[in-house]
Image (cartoon, rainbow, N blue to C red; front, side):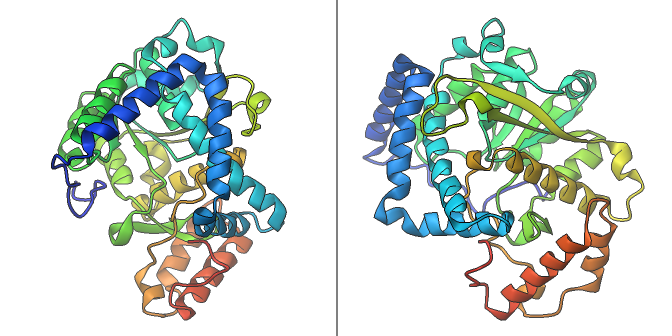
Length: 367
């Protein structure tokens, strides 16, 4: 399990003079947002997020977001891409209001009033019958998924990066545990997650982050992205299906600038079962590429609810860094993916060629 997502070192968790003030501010702000309610606080924070996104100091991130969007949606014009980039900031700030809701709001009796379910029956049956791995991305409301499962009596273990602020970190752990979410320090996940799966419990990842040089490079919007191999390794070692789900703000309230009420829809985008990878020539590559594809499908459902400011394509494969030709072995693996098209393969090869000849600074390519 050396491939479980880990950072190069633990965060600096020494007590600092400003930590009590940061902690007090977060606690007070969360209490205020709960008092205002998710509807009003969502509208307020959406406006603040819009102002933040348009601030001069944020211009480089907005430009990066627009470049990412235009690569992922080549048919989209500049104006529409800019609108989605700004909506992404409104969505990010609105999440603060929604995630400040108390455990009482998430209980089994109340969630049917503000959560609609798509086709989730098979996924729930798998979760009830044995170990399962749940993944989502930074799209929609990722914490709501865990809270909903907790309300169903299906608590899960979610990997996270601990906060530098010790008091804030303890508060986050405590509040999430009330929702049925046990946060697992990513620096100890290699030991904790296998034990959880052996007990037929659920483990969860937000799996769209850049995995660095240790990751496996698979397609993500027709561009190679460094992706964690640990998820596929865990699934294969424990014969656990990978359930790819997302909670999106419903269409009736999808106008991030002026939401009228708190309403979400939960959908399962894909389920990757052991039988699906059993006969693959490279099972790990197949599983990793498929769950990356699932996250792409999640984002396409509601691109304005994805955090486009992320540097999802920051790490580059060795052949690009060394400005070498596209490897034939990698091309063959890509061609073996059932969903791969000629157009997508051509874009993947083209983007790698552009990056290798521009020393990883191509303006037109996503970063």
